[in-house]
Image (cartoon, rainbow, N blue to C red):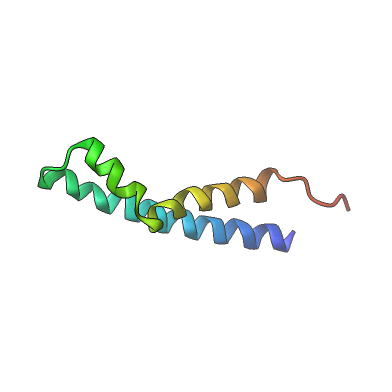
Length: 69
């Protein structure tokens, strides 16, 4: 149970970091980037993938079957 909570918190932290980075890069749209340019830009940024990794870890910590006690 403790390991699941630990993974949930790690996943939440990664998702927050990735989400904040993705939202912060939305400022590129105000400088003249199109939505396609924005998506191509964040596709190459590692910190934007942290959101997906964090969401996967959260999903696994909640729905992955654990040991029956």
